[in-house]
Image (cartoon, rainbow, N blue to C red; front, side, top):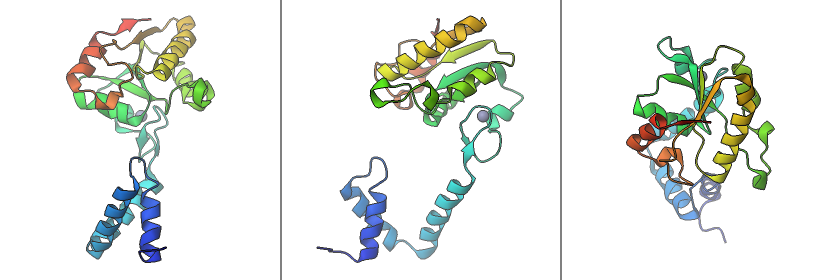
Length: 198
Ligand code: ZN
């Protein structure tokens, strides 16, 4: 039986498709939205569409940005010869928050996972190798310490080794299976400083 108006049910359905939003939260959010002042609801809807229409991958590092090239890749002050490889944009944001990394990034958008059928061609690995045609001093692999993250790190290091470019892996101060975005800045910095050459 439909307890609510069909419009509310539709809204609850759409909201519950979002990650981490269960049926209860979806209901709560839906009622919250319906009770919002009209302008606020419109701003939310418009912001979602603007983001959807304008956000794309940076052509250099593949992070999400709203211009052709992200501010980090555009910056003259960054060391473009040191590339930190991360799994996703949230991990990039975590390192960026420490304010101590002066290089640039490469966002893979995933990690190799034979279990889930994700292979090297499903992440932005080819694009990383293309970037290495330019002058690069070091590639720091900062994938998560999960099985997938480690598999990806091994794979990348094997690919890069023959090029003679230095490859390093962030230290294992990062808890196993830990998602980089949940780790505090001190731990992240320690992991970066304690990186080991592969
Ligand atoms: Zn970029």
